Amino acid sequence: MNRKSEVCFSRSIRQVVCLVCGICVAALLTGSCVERGIQRVEAKMEQTQKTLAKEVLRFHVLANSDSEEDQAVKVKVRDAVLAYMEENMEQELKAEPDAGATRTWVETHLRELEEVADRTVAQEGYLYQSRAEVEVSYFPDKQYGDIFFPQGEYEALKIKLGKARGHNWWCVLYPSLCFTDTTCSVVSDEGKNGLKEVLTAEEYEMVTATSDFKIKWFFFGDGAKEE
Image (cartoon, rainbow, N blue to C red; front, side, top):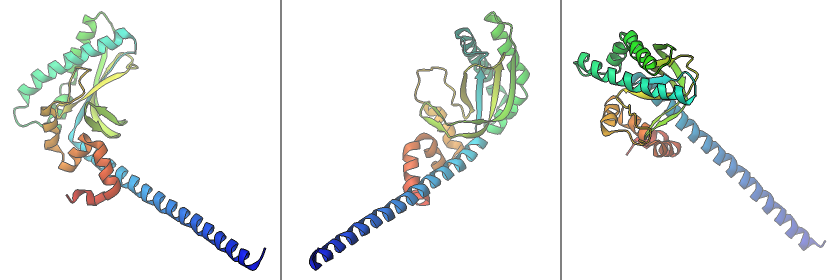
């Protein structure tokens, strides 16, 4: 190889090395930016979940089993309990309701709620009993209509039927986000307005426009609020 060829070869090697180094640096920078973006989104989701958990009371009915019959009973109990609460809660909570007042009402009427559930189960021809309790439990991400609830711990009224080993039905007692039509994919405006009253504009956007919210926080972080 003559001198000229050696120089050209050496230059080509340097160019390749520079290109590879550039690609590696770009990949590292991109990976770092992506990781920071993901961390921003996760941190904001966690923060919003904690705020949301203080302002809502969830409602779960856990079926005895996944048999068709037990699942049908679960739906009957759901309807009966919701009807009872709608009629009686409105009469007793004269002042503007909130999550705390709703929680207090539920805690002082657990026995009545059990009686409604037990009566419904018996009417359907079954002998198992129900248990009503308010407890804090971990829940995974849940999309309910067009409302998103991020994973985390929430307080909920739980009505457990029999062995409580079947799939559950859930909604939010306060603000009122319960609907019983399983084909419904959009929460009512009334329910959304109730949620809007207890959340900041940013938090409300998080639970109603999750994808757009995540994109903004991924790229802009705190700067997403400056609009």
